[in-house]
Length: 290
Image (cartoon, rainbow, N blue to C red; front, top):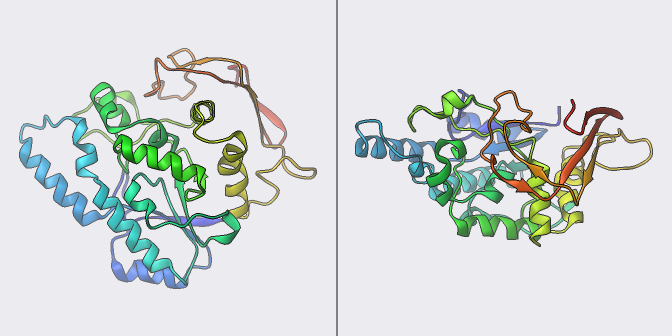
């Protein structure tokens, strides 16, 4: 066990920890890394009530999601978690989404930090205007935010304010996602194309290939003390991916491997192709064959 995760704001499923005394006890006594999903529950409930009143016929557009689970909900909860953790335990902020939260973080390499942060490819790729096109398909918690927030996340990843890239994969059925906004579950199937997304950002000049390697491989293995993982070195487990950087990946029903068989990236063409994947030295994927 490399650590554990707590939810300071409710999300899909019932995993919320909202008792102040219990939270304080966790931070005081934990000998392991705490990863926290940071959204302020009180603010989310207030915003939810407000928009349910505005849309009494259950016809709220999914574009209100960044208003229900807003910037302030993220900032208040992240600040609370960081204040609780200082001098007590190591804390990782899960899927950070806002420029305002970044003001609470420090630049630096992973071995110098007790407070770290991760970002998902979803929040590095989409912005709130994409709700008009994709609706509940990009409904996730924390919500996709503004273009300004997205650009700040990309910059923070380059500058070592953000330490990890993590997928936050949640493969809900499309029938569930097509329900009205308030009934549609939050979550996106994202793991299959996560490396393609990040390589696209490399090609756009948002970060270097070595930085990508650091954020997706080296840093997670180092910080969470994953023995003999995360590096290509003699004696280490051969967890490897072979990539054609000149290949193409078209996202459609035929290429999606997730059992839920949909993706918010349908219609995209990425300028890279995953050729093979190895786990512990065993080939588990090769040219679309599992």
